[in-house]
Image (cartoon, rainbow, N blue to C red; front, side, top):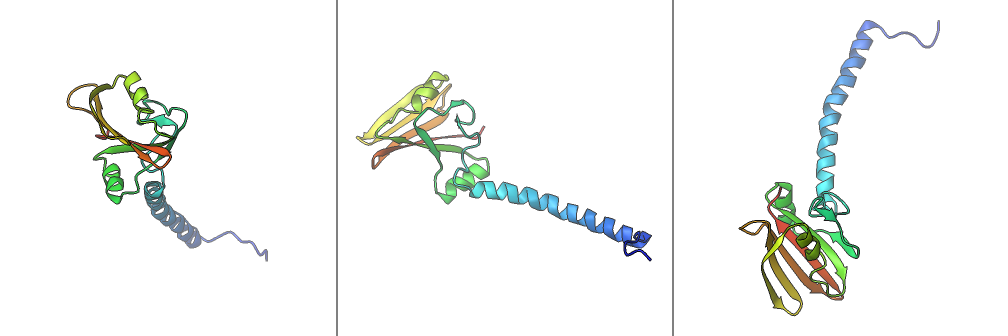
Length: 151
């Protein structure tokens, strides 16, 4: 008698049920893990790597993407309530990303040098302002934050 035998009808049904059950469990679990692990990543707020403001333009040379550590920002971005992107630049370069936004049609609606190392502006293509732009000196770098409503 051969040691490999054809499974009986009952064994085939059991195997099919097990495979179907595994698929029913693993597909939603895989989707959930993929979704949740991306929100836990350090760059959770950058939807399109290499692109400024979700595909508006390539990130200017010298800017490195980062995201806020704040749990409240994470929750707002995840819920689709708001959008935020952050970039680090060497030295004090408060307008490093603003120039790109302005070249893509965003108009400076209001700005303020809040301190020698803190610049803030509101930009938009219409009123009210669509983007809040801040640049803060942190040691020998500039932290640029762009925030606004989720698209």
